[in-house]
Image (tube, rainbow, N blue to C red; front, side, top):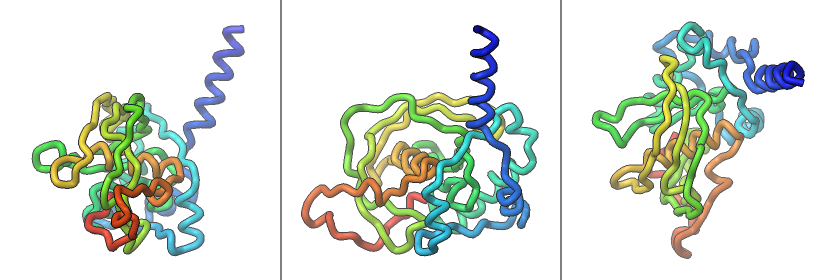
Length: 215
């Protein structure tokens, strides 16, 4: 019985953790560490379909030795910086893997944090209506979105280190790191911020031009 359980667990892990596809490798390798990716847009039918797909986990045993993964991370950082975002997820450039980058606005100098196979392990029952959410993949649109005020998360970084921490804050004027994490995590599940629109008043219900893109 134990043998059967072990085999079943192995098969499930293989199914959930997939290597880069040939198409994904082509996208990753079509530039160097100084080359940005093309960001997928909801205004394009094929791009929009891809953005709605579920991503798969990355093998955490080979994070530091996987040259394609490291190149992906470097190019994602370039893409995010060039676009002026505070986060970017792999599906936004056509890579359906569970990885995103986000700016730690809760830390000095706002460093870039890599999150591989990220998950939310705890959150409150109450939610907040975060004002002015935006997305690099949804041009010229901003709206309020339903979010948790804090989250407890787990993920690996680009050096293979495991992280478990609590992210708080939902104010644009102070700290909204937890909002960025939630926004990017949604991308890995094919969810866009426009799926979570909320209103704080009748005036807020109007969609306006974005102030800051989350990604």
